[in-house]
Length: 191
Length: 191
Image (cartoon, rainbow over all chains, first blue to last red; front, side, top):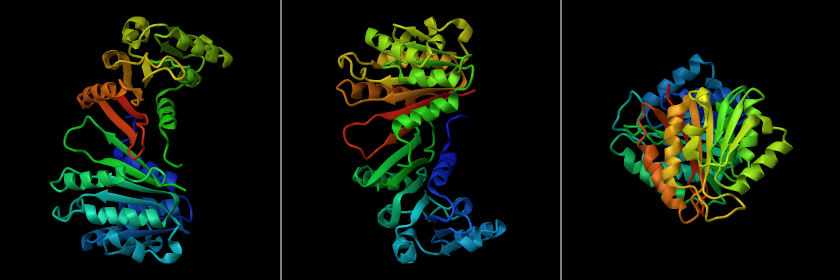
């Protein structure tokens, strides 16, 4: 396949956005894969702040980061991403270059614990405030579960309404696939 | 801007799809910019077949290709892209690696001459037959003119219905912009 699939495209966006010494946010730790990826991109001088409300996600991320010797540059919060502004130290406000969300449930975890449109949108609003100009928010939208369609629609309604002067909002989606595969929306804060 | 805009993304797709010695198709010559770009990618051993129904487009493309010393590797047809199968020599069927369409009217030309859904879809069907596996069709959809919305809707209806086993169909679109800016649909033929 020559076209980039959804997960490869998410990684391309992270690589475009992050370099040595940068600040990044993993808004939904899940099993820690994105934190590992971003921690490598930001290097020893960078920091990744990771958020998740589930103990299982914190533990799984912690052990994956440890295996990769990256735990020193990642700060984990067992808190929802609606607390980003409050928990990311003020000294790093204005310096965040990338943030990623995997919307839906924890893979391999409790499928009844899912991200919610209100807290997702609240986190995006906060990020648009405290990111650096040209900072990118990557949203990987899983919408196959029952609440997924509601979150997707509320989220898209909000994102389509973002002022053109304040952000670029890009949707990247395969449109001929069955079973509601995930798609990406990337939001770039304008300078 | 870190996210790739529509025209840069079209060029990224052409670069991914084409290399030295390849066969490519410019399905809507317009002012010849894409033919120049693809002719450089396919090199001296490659060929670009260009189609346009307007004399002005043929002349403008011809002179742009000449300026760039690329006229020897581009074959221009003053014919619509619904004649692709018939006009691309049989020896090159199965070898086409990329094709690009700019849907709408000729920039700077007669705005009443526009691409039409029937002929656009007929050309895509033909390309899916005669392209190489992993060949990519890039559709840059301008839909701000009166007939543009109709073409867009018929085209998307057709593309969303393409068998998942026969093609990947990717939509790349900025979703918070005013005035119906163009978007891209890329179709990759599956092996």
